[in-house]
Length: 341
Image (cartoon, rainbow, N blue to C red; front, side, top):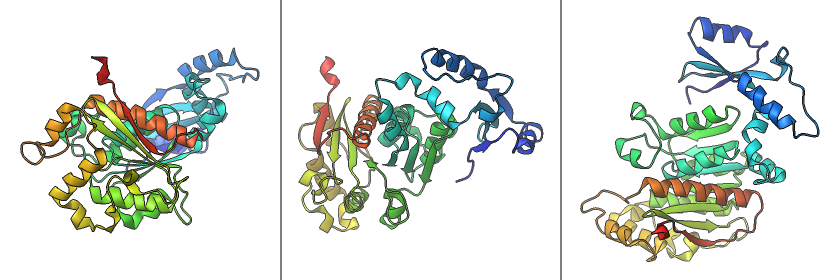
């Protein structure tokens, strides 16, 4: 992937920093002033306060170069920055949970709803991420994805990578801009020498790939989380293949879909039929009407920004509970905010 961030040491990489500033005209943002203020506040409540001397910060300083912004940001090094970013999480997320969440590897396939899940995972301190999506940002995505018309045509994986790294430059984000395909399952889900994901968030549109990725996740004993839009509400599905390696896909709702070929799963009438059995009848009335119009007056499953945002919260929370060892069994949960009125 082109346009990766550079993490530069103030002394070891001084020449590179000078070049970017002088020859390439990168702007400089100094984040240490506000960081020092926050650190001093935190140290008032710490039993082991750290003395950060403004005149001697280089030992804990890094310069982060963002090529797509043509900007260098001066920041504290990774552990200090992480302390700042997660300070307001404390006691809502325990220290042990935060360590597990930060170190846990999360794989996300599909960056529409999955993009919302990714954002919330990163906000709460997740730092190891794999993301896959073959699409670019289009105008019709902008009803549910936070994006800019300036980025139309840019791969969704690129935009997601940038969004995460601009909030935490020390996060590790592996991108798969070709989307998920069984040929790269071991690299994406994990296997052999590749570290295995602790949880897989599956939010793809392609039914064939939804089936295939579950097959590989089950074989690798990786739990799967899926959040489905339901009008303004969402449906959360959890498949604990880590605890139930023989569990049928989609809770058995779709029958023996693994025997069907990719071509069969992609036939429009078969796809609608199977998707209907997976989702079930307990959906919003307006969604029932809208689904009846797919292929007639609208091209695909209708989605709202409210549901996509809610799905990000629900999916990220479920992923965190799985990684942090909460008792979250396989099953389906409806989250209904439309009950507000």
